[in-house]
Image (cartoon, rainbow, N blue to C red):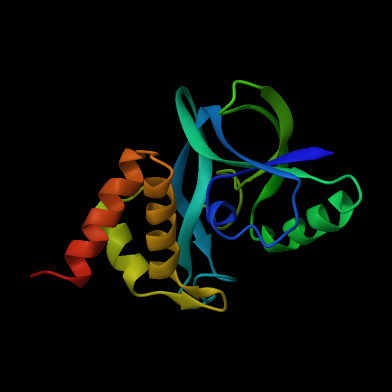
Length: 175
C-alpha cells in the first residue's frame, strides 16, 4: 500500500479507489498557481493555470492523503502518471496525517525546470488569466473555485488561495 498526497484537484476529485482518506500536511512546501495547463484547464493556445508545489523550508501545505490498496496501486499510479503528465514528476515524500501519523508516500510536483512552469505574477493578473481559460477538463475558474471551496470546507486557510479567490470573485462580480 502507498499514500498519495493531493493538494490541488485530487483533493475534491481523486477519481480512484482508496482505502483511507485523511487530511494531511506536507512541510517545506507551499501551494502556488505557477503551472500552465494546456491539457486540462486550458488549451495549447491559451493554457490555464493550476497549482504545483514550490519548495520553502518555512512553509507547509495542507491537503488530503489517500491510502491506495495494494491490489489497485499499480493501475491507480499509472492513471495518475497520465493525469499529471504536463510537467509533473512523481516524487517520494514524507508527510503528516491529521491523526499524528508520519507516513511515506508520493505526490506530483511540477518543478521550475519543466517547460510549463510559469512562476509568480500579481494575484490580479492570475485571476484575470484564470477567468479566461477553458480546457478539456473544464474551466480554469471551476478549478480555482473548487480548490478554494474544498480548502474552506476542511478549515484550511491558504492565504495565497484566499487572496486569489477574492480577486477572482471581485473580477467576475465587480458590484
